[in-house]
Length: 137
Image (cartoon, rainbow, N blue to C red; front, side, top):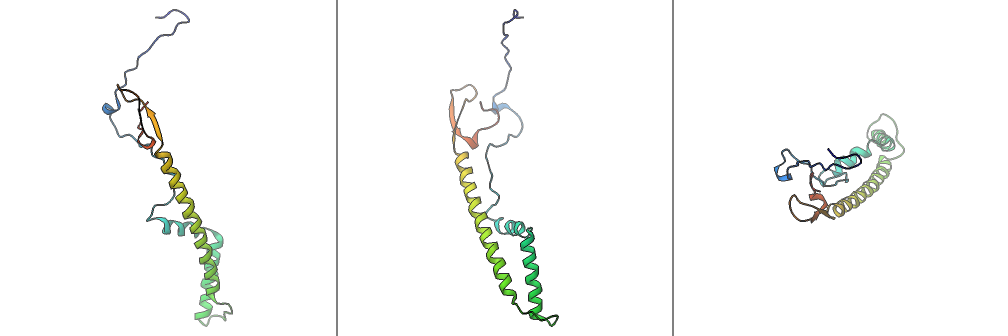
């Protein structure tokens, strides 16, 4: 027992990471929204949750019915409304794609940043940030 005002040194036995049990998580950062195969369906899903897009789609369908059926006389062609809707959705999708590509590039830059760590029982070393594991000091 140390005297009053002195600090006691305590050693905590921690096994090296290679001897620790259980699955460890990765340190990889991912902030991008889309994968190459999920861009179109996910973007359409997001855009059709906007009230304005749903409204113009419904109006276009009603105008198309006026053109093709005798329910009522449609004076404006449905193509004009659908064309504007598709153009706006294409611009929004392009902006989302460019934003996601910038996010992926920023993720790649952060994940490939060098980090210094001290392996168990060896000299300090460096590795990329995404390879840093739980237990690395």
